[in-house]
Length: 341
Image 1 (tube, rainbow, N blue to C red):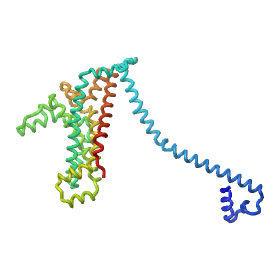
Image 2 (image 1 turned 120 degrees about the vertical axis):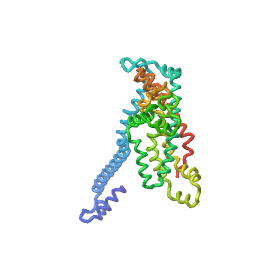
Image 3 (image 1 turned 60 degrees about the vertical axis):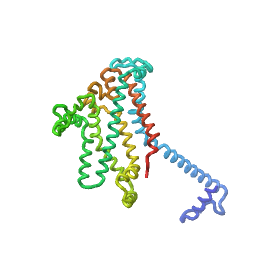
Image 4 (image 1 turned 135 degrees about the horizontal axis):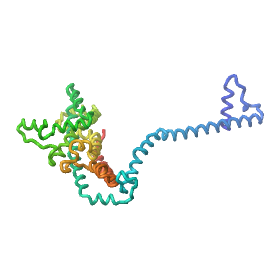
């Protein structure tokens, strides 16, 4: 009835309209009829509010639906199918897939070659991840001076990142050729001992790591430059007023404030180092003597050369678990040392 009285009050104030039946002199039948109309209108308003509330609740999920479908089709389904294949024995040709349970995982445990490939992968990780971040940080600190020559150098450093990896690998194959390579020619001209580079099992992994660092350092440098640019001007001005040495400023001010960027780069570099395949496939094909065969190349070898799809899928699951464990350890022991402004 409160809504009815408010409606009647508004109706009496509007010129040109018939006075509301709720004023003095209206009959009981008019009051009852008008109250029913107003009650129906109020119910319609409430119903409309409920519809809008439901729409606001459902609409975000409608917007997320294409992404969720994409993830289900191209991420969750392949992952689930790979888990299924890891429990089977299949040669990729025979339509009959034999279920073998955990036998493939037992074969991984008993496979001595798997541990060698895992060791090679960790060596590549230790060579490329710290090396890429260190070189990129030094270049970013030098390029942060914002001189014209430094802007040109930024473009030159980023160029390898946009060049095809196949082209990069072919160029470095010629540079590292033990007989006619440019690197050995320069070493001989400087009267320094020459190297076999990718032709020797002792230096092949280092050679591949050098190519990987050279290819990635441009992208990493730009990310670190953006991190340096986010350091507030107040902090930089305070450091200048203190007249501290550059080394002290870097380790006490710049590096802690740059730690979120470096942690992000550490994550993506670690994942990329465990997934390296193209460079090794083109430059060494896993040799010499398996010295550059990483775990992803090991998976490729068993899947598409030996046609042991079940075993290769099981190794892929193990690789995924290793990466998940590494990321968990990173967040557990490293993320709490990150400083934010």
